[in-house]
Image (cartoon, rainbow, N blue to C red):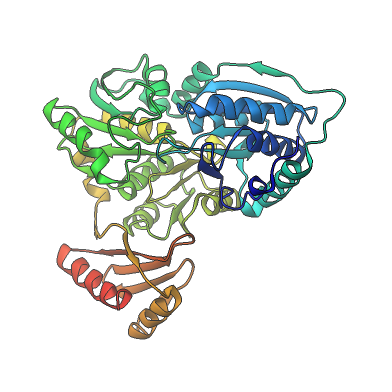
Length: 456
C-alpha cells in the first residue's frame, strides 16, 4: 500500500544513530512496516530479533515492523519487553540483526527504533541508516514489494538468559558483602530487568518507580538531568543505603549515587571500571571521549593501560573500540561499553561493576572513589548563539598561544590540568562548553572567560 506524499519524507525522524519521532504524527505503523521491509533487505539475514520498551505504541509499531520484515521472506523473533542492552544481548548471542523500539528518555508521545546488525554492530547514518531511510521512503510512495514465501513471527523470552550472562561477565560479584541498594527505574525498563538480574545476589534492594509506565508519572527517565535524581538521593540518605542506581527509560545508561546522596560523575565511574578491567586484562586499551575527565587517562596510564581519546557519540566509541581492540569504553553521558558485550553499551553492566567493586571491600563508596576524583568539572553548559563558527573562531583567536586540537569542536589546554572543550550541536543553534580544572576557583575563572566569548 502506498502512503500519501506528506508521509514519505523520513528525514525528520531518521536521526544520526536511530529513528525517533512523535507517534502517530511522525512515526506510525505504515512507516514502521516500510522501515522493517527496508531493514530486512539491507541486513540480508535470515532472521531478525526485536524488543520494545514500556511505551504502549511499541506493541503496534513493533508488530508492523515485523510484518515489513516478514514480507521480505525474513523471520522475526519477538523478545517482547526489554531494555536496549537486552536487545543487544539477543542480537549478539543469536548472531542476528536486531531492532529495539524505544525513544529512550524522550517524553511519552515519542517512540523510535534503534537498529543493529549481527553481533550488536550499530547501524547509523554512516553505516546504512541513509540507505534504509531512502528505501523505506520508496516503499511508502510506491508500496512494499513482497516475496512469495513470507517469513514467520515467533516469540522468545530472553530475560533469564540475559540476566545470567550479565552476572557471568562480572564474576567477582560472588562473595561480596551484603549491600543496601536503592534503584530508581524511572518507570522504565530497569523495572523489568533489575529484579531478574539482581536475583540471588546479596543485595537488599529498595525499588523506586519499577512500574512500567511510558507516561513517566514520577519524573523523566533521564538521569543526566539532576532534577530527576533528587528522589533517589533522598531515598539513599534516608534509608542509610550503600549506593543508589538510576536508569534511563531504555536502561542502557546508569547513574550512581554514593552513600552520602552525592551523584557520582560518569567520568569517575569510567575510571573505576577501567581500573577493574585493567586488573583483569593487564595492559589493555581503554576508550574515553574528549569531554571525559582527565582523571580517566591518568588512571589508565598509571595502571599500565593505553588510553585512547575519541569524539563524542556512541558510533565513534564503538568504531574505535573495534579498531583498537579495547576492553572498555566510557562516555561522560553515562554510556559504558564492554568488549565482552559485543562492544555495546550497558547500564546494567556498569551497575554490576560498581556493586562488585564496593562489595569486595569494607569502606563506603565515596571512599572507594576518592582515588578517581581528581578534578572539578563545570558540567555541560549550553549557550544559544547566532553563528557557531564565528564564536569558535573568536575563541581560537583569544587562546592563540595555548595548545589546542579540533578532534571534536575545539579543545584548549590551559595548563596545570585545566582545559575546556566547545562543540557545536548538530541539531540546534547551540554551543556546548565543558571545563575542568584542579580546583573550583580555577574552573570557575576558565568557565566564565570562555562563556564571555561564546555569548559575545
